[in-house]
Length: 194
Image (cartoon, rainbow, N blue to C red; front, side, top):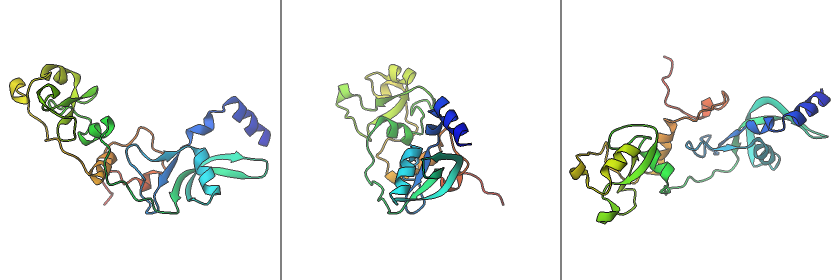
C-alpha cells in the first residue's frame, strides 16, 4: 500500500494540493467569508504540528512521512482568537461585494467595472461614498456626465460598509467549491428544516 501511494503521488504530485483547509477563528467562525479563509493542506498540517490549531475535520486522504501518517485536515480552528479587522479596505473586490456584484445603474450582473458617481472630471473623488460597481455599457454611457444628465438613478446610495456588513454579504456568495465538512461552520443563509 505504501508503494501504491508513492507511485500515485509521483504520478499526480498536484493532487494533494487540492485539499484546502477551512480556517476558523477560536470562536469557530471563519476568519473571512469572502474570500473564504482557506489554507493549503501543508500549512494546516504544519500549524497542527506547531500546536497552533486543532483539527476538527479531515479528508479521507492521508500524507505520510517515514515515521508518521496523518489524515489531511479539512477544517482547523485557531487556538488563539484573532481580532477581526474593523477597517474595511477600499478595494475593487470589496466594492463589488458591497454592491452585490450588480451594476448600480441597471442591476446587470457579470462583467463589472467601477464608476465615479460624481465624475472625477467634475471634482469627484475616489471614495466609498462616490464609487459604485457598474457594467461596461452603463459606464460608457455615463462617461463624465452626472446622473441627472444621463437619466440614471442608483440602486442604493454608495457608502462605506462596516466589516460586519461585508462579512454578512460574503455569506450570500459562497465559493464554487464547498467541502461537505465545511458547511456546518459557514452559516450560509439557508432555510432550516422544521
